[in-house]
Image (cartoon, rainbow, N blue to C red; front, side, top):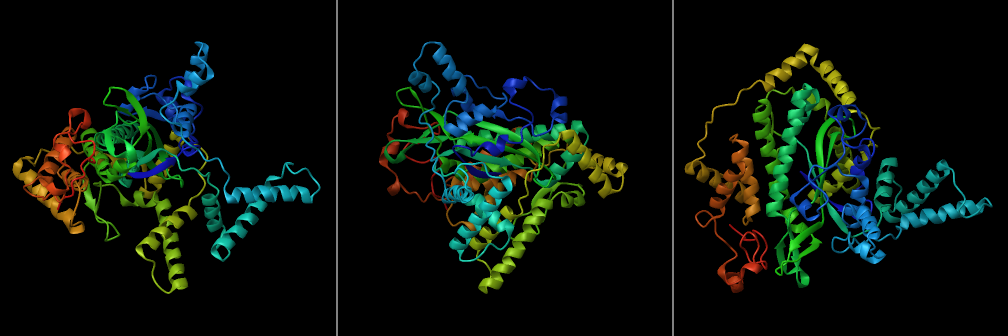
Length: 543
């Protein structure tokens, strides 16, 4: 699961740019046939327990462009436009109508232009005046592009003391310095992507099987979001945010995409979590505040493992696949669990994007070594990988229908495997497994063994750790025993409790470091987990 911030203003637009047709408010309900035949991605849908605090937005409803602009662009209620008009129609003043759509403070957006944009604007004016035209006369697209390139090249050379290595390096730099300035965080984009073998099977399997894979993917995302609502849905109040209080659920907009920029099958879902969260105050009132982002980042890895584990369980139960570990080409990385029996040639064919990034990263590393006489450090290597990702990022292809995509992917698979029969036999062979008999009792002996193994693995990398570090490893360990989907959460918590308890771990927080007020705090100063609001959720340092 990837995680990055969404900035206020237009930071959300890449999520809605490829959505099929128009907004759902204008289109009405769509049929399954529409989903397969319309060009572009399927519209987003609302999710999260926090929707209950909005009143007029329900889970499963389609997300409109206007709603995304209101919530993620401006920090207002998703239906702000409608609420404003309704309030005016009922006789409210302009000010009162505007307040009716507020969710706490609106986002502060710095609309000031970047130095690059200012320089381009000045160059456009100079271009017109030099030709005896009005300062704001229209400029031909080709001339505007040339001016932007000239300005960018000069500014790049001034910053780095050299000319850009190539067009891609210049384009990447211009994209970075040309972004709108804003420090306001509108939300967080969580990207859930299954392993490559799952996307490959989803791309070539009969439609009814593909639909089951999508359903499993959605169930796994729901489990991860539920986990985050339990362990990462907080806000902070008081001077300096001294108190961490419970949020009343997350507000999320989910957008499922079908392919990579290279057009390869790549089932993945962006879950845009709003930075707005409602919290119930001690006096019973509700306030809209900002989500505690630190808790979200801290639980990024455990939530990712929850997604992977639930996805495997759902796919086992829905379509009868099995998973096995495959060693990673990078020895520093742990083995990846892929669908047993999936032909690796399909995954290789449909990994052109990652292959291009690896190739460019290697080229940049060789250039770095030649220029500096040494290999890049770990931090420098990450920077080179990020540069390679940007430089190899092709423009998003024109929208195509799901039906056309599936037809193309099946044709590619038949070409690789040799025949339609070979493809059918492959799909049948990896989805024909009946539910295996349970081989694990999940008794106390298993719980203790799994807790000790998890502690051992975490302790090799960390001399001190937090509960979420252990939980992430526990989820990985539980996954290898193929538990039923409905038992995963209970098993994980049972193992984590034992691993982090006094029997196997030492609490380094210590009585001397604990505020004595935590023992006598009244209920109104405690979170749902029972802890005093002046402590952070699961913040005990262990060893």
